[in-house]
Image 1 (cartoon, helix red, strand yellow):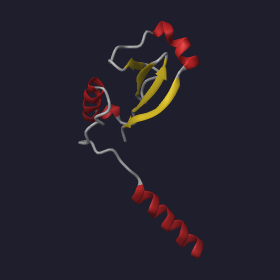
Image 2 (tube, one colour):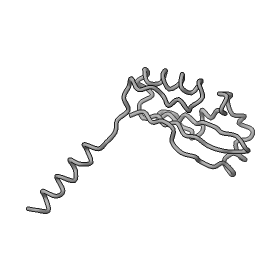
Image 3 (cartoon, one colour):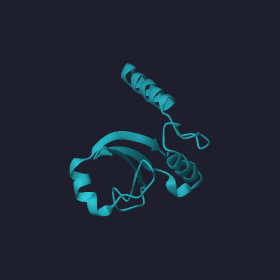
Image 4 (cartoon, helix red, strand yellow):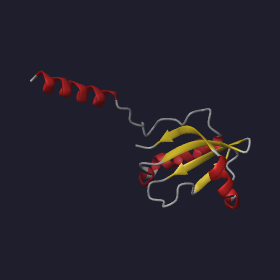
Length: 108
């Protein structure tokens, strides 16, 4: 019986600590302005549910990838810090030498 009570308390604790994105939350200020605008637009679009924005470092520059769950490719929307689309002819080198910094934003 103690085992079941412990498991229930554990599950309640996990549920209480889970963090959901507030649809009215402002994007982090340390992100480029174009990405803050894109996040604000995505918050209004129900198709963006489950999307993830990741930050990468490659060739002495920072890149952001917006990954939507309904897209079939991993790096479909890869952009540099200025918001310029990534040159796909360099994708092989990027894939071989990039460093993933982390997740910047997720849409629950």
